[in-house]
Length: 348
Image 1 (cartoon, rainbow, N blue to C red):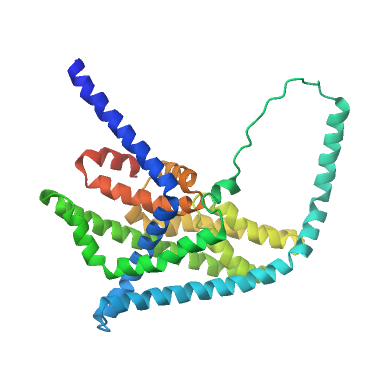
Image 2 (cartoon, rainbow, N blue to C red):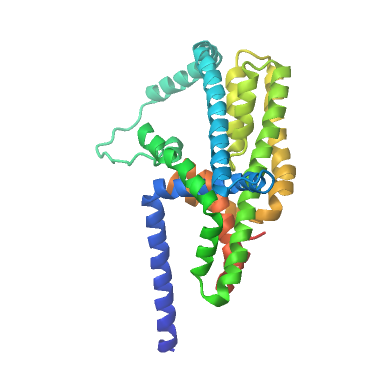
């Protein structure tokens, strides 16, 4: 009995040690790993364009990859410029919105002050022992984890286009070299697994982009009809905030409600809230299963735990990357005999 249990204990101790080392490496290597993962995601998005330029226009893969990356950067620049100009115009009007919001919240604040005075009048017993309590980490601290300065963020982001270009250029070499790392009997499985991961990542990004554009377009139209100020900017922002896992509904509701307070009638404001809820539910129950369900096949519990874990490790970036990373792990587990129970646990 002892001889059978000793190797088993030894196996679990090594497994826990390996998991611990991976968590430590992921935590302290956030800037490098996040840049690498974003570059991999972008390379899968741009790969169809590179293939089209190579097959139909007959461009060398290096030149096709360069054109694809330049087009992507131009698109990001255009979106950033348009969003920045709209955001500046919105920020200029924030003071008048804040005054109206204060006037709306004034009765609630006065009531709270009355309750505080009542509590002070009743009195509380004095305490001589003071207990130091460590401040609780706020959601804002968690979401901005790892983003210490703008300079560091821009420095890390500047590597993304170059990594994306090299991943596109050396796609076939990188895949074949990765497959060759495995023993001969496992190379076919490794090749199939990499292909499935690639298709899953493409479906995830393209699906989210299409869903975001659809929700944003409908939001802009509805907000414009209801008279929401800056409806073109607010609708676009609300539509893409709705894509954030689990927090999307609340985040998507904040911009239109914030600018609508004091500007819209109660009925119009309720219609804004109802439209955001209905669009979010439609995307969650119809669009996501149609566009992403066949590729991801993750159960809600696994997704929730993945979001908590990667949000704790990488903050806001972790929330964005949690689902594709977990989906890739499930595909790997599906093709490794000893890991198939874990794939079943992650699956639907």
